[in-house]
Length: 284
Ligand code: CAA
Ligand code: NAD
Image 1 (cartoon, rainbow, N blue to C red):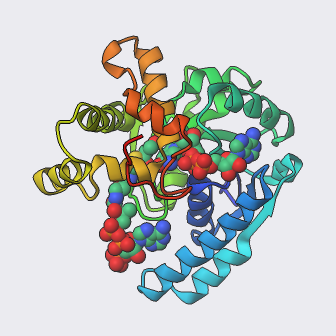
Image 2 (cartoon, helix red, strand yellow):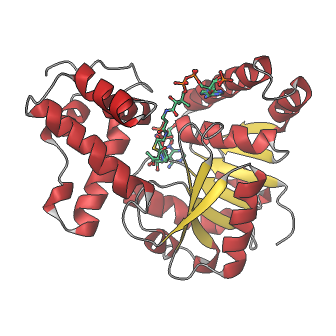
């Protein structure tokens, strides 16, 4: 595939804004699309302040930071993504919503474009099946926060071509990431292992094993994790964690993946974590 000059990112939340930033600082022109105009305003602010933070710490030159902001354009019109060589989807973790978007993207994207999903857990094969280009659909799973975390997990669907895989790998490496490859099973590698741990931390809290502070301190100091599992859930978004647990539960068909009722209750109550207002795990 020719060099990737323009990408489209759909979804301007915490992941989409981070992916857009990463692409722009690596010299790619970016269209960032969200259906919510407020999300685009928040994304632009978050990208500016993250770039400023990287510049002030000497991780990025001012010239590259300024160039990145110039490369970034926001839109709410799907048609604007027609010029993109690769479109990376980072919308809500719902199979039906993503399927409907992939079928729309297939209509507006240029024939050669790759359609990638940043999904945490959902089948790439089933997303690809909603398009007429399943060989050009792939999972490109960034970690949060995308500008900082060093990994991209790549997932091939049943029909993903070698060309699509190679172009996606080259793009991830251009962004400075280490690539790992997963088969297309629910939760892939990272969330297959991480989410049951987070869910278990909720069970520990739910069943009164320990306080939230001791659960997090235990995993931080006892296993050298940068964040405790409850703090990490707050950082990822409790809605995202619950959606992933549901996909693991249904997709792998084992009750050991059943979402903890306390996690369900927080999400029911609208306590989603840091992206909204950070929650301190009150007893509800
Ligand atoms: N933009 C720019 N710079 C950032 C940043 C951002 N959004 N976030 C952090 N940084 C930089 C800071 O400026 C700082 O730089 P220096 O080292 O030069 O000082 C560095 O990163 C560390 O930041 P902080 O000192 O503020 O905070 P920290 O040391 O706690 O690090 C963290 C923050 C990198 C997020 C760290 O806490 C961490 O690694 N947490 C775990 C994150 C994790 O596990 N992510 C994966 C979640 S799972 C997933 O993503 C998959 C899924 O599908 C759910
Ligand atoms: P988020 O809630 O922060 O943002 C989602 C954004 O998508 C919102 O701004 C919303 O307005 C927008 N959106 C929803 N439907 C849309 C549509 N049809 N068209 C355009 N925009 C739409 O979510 P997030 O945490 O950024 O997660 C996005 C995706 O990335 C999910 O699939 C999630 O599983 C995955 N992911 C999340 C993390 C994480 O730590 N949060 C890590 C890796 C992957």
